[in-house]
Image (cartoon, rainbow, N blue to C red):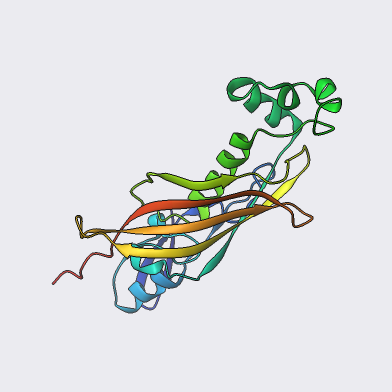
Length: 204
């Protein structure tokens, strides 16, 4: 744990994998806007639950806001390994068969793509301190195949938010998730529904 002093307060910084391609990996330290605001009030703060975009509670997710969430890369070994375990169709697991198949080469399972995109969202969009899980996604699509060597850029757009009527300590955030390849072609698209805690009332 590294410490950083500012505005008379103490900020505990953590390593965070912001915007890092999964194959390369990168860690850095950060201290963002919610942290600075807390420091300005003379409070100690811990960034463990705050992500790079300053999203920490339901109120921070504003409809219309779009966030660049980083990227994820795919290689042949990871594509084959995932598919052998979860989606062993020939065009996912056998390069020779895939070359003669409908896609003209090996491609990642759509479920592999979705899982990799989810990892990026967890690291760069969903707030660890307030995320309560999800009942699912709507309209999941993978319009263009993902091939070995591809890197996808992940973007999240807040579509809709509403406070829960039955459980007032939380809200519902609907997010359009898109991942595009280097040519700008969409490789994944889906609308996620997430439950997020609202910001606690100030104590005292």
